[in-house]
Image (cartoon, rainbow, N blue to C red; front, side, top):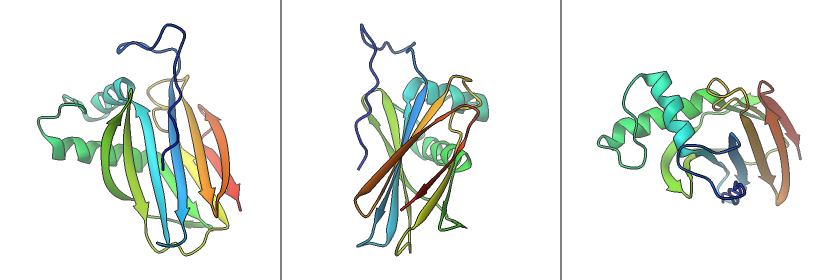
Length: 162
């Protein structure tokens, strides 16, 4: 479901520094299952630092001693910073889990009982409090129709009509 996380710089990206600050959120309507399938990819190092600031505790998403505690912080953070309305109605994200992919952490969510979608409104301010240079890229797919946008901090709202 999640598209490529194409974020590379000349000479490569190191663990401690990269030249861009971006998250990628993908929202896909699954008409057969009547769900919205959502993934959110965030650079691991930035995400850990932002979680440390918010929760004031040790964060290790790659080798957690307390996986359940990390899951709770990941889901709590994203569900606070990613709000979705389908056809004007707020939807409740159900957290499914997270995994490492390349230099990022991808967390997965689902919204049930969405038979059809004509309009999506997204508020996405993931890591905006962490870096003023933060960018959010949002991809939406409904009935095979893909629409994307970029939000540059502090801009945090996007709308899609299908």
